[in-house]
Length: 152
Image (cartoon, rainbow, N blue to C red; front, side, top):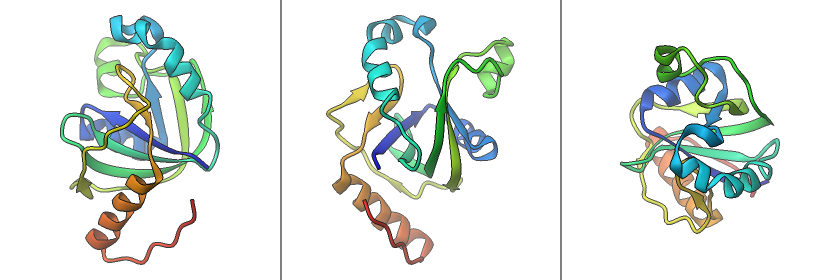
């Protein structure tokens, strides 16, 4: 099992991820950063597997709004899902990940900036170190006053 950070610009996108049990990443042709970092993105994307865990945060603030269990990855889905896709009437994030479940909160569970060695700029994808995951889970546990038992 691997641990991941998925970053978003808005909480609304994370709410939609909760409702649809999915996440999407930019395509290669979306912009300069995406073209430059395409190979790195594909290398990491192909490492995402079932039962991996994704922490979903707001990129600029470090606010963590969701923890999801990954069900599957699939690519090049042409169904518009997110608000900016609906406005532009085209798919912007075709590289998708589906979730089996997701724990979501409108208010952030915690705000935590994580220095990731393997973060793909322009895609909002990075590998999460286990010690950072444990800290985040500790914050979530305290926030929702719950027992959390996990093994990494």
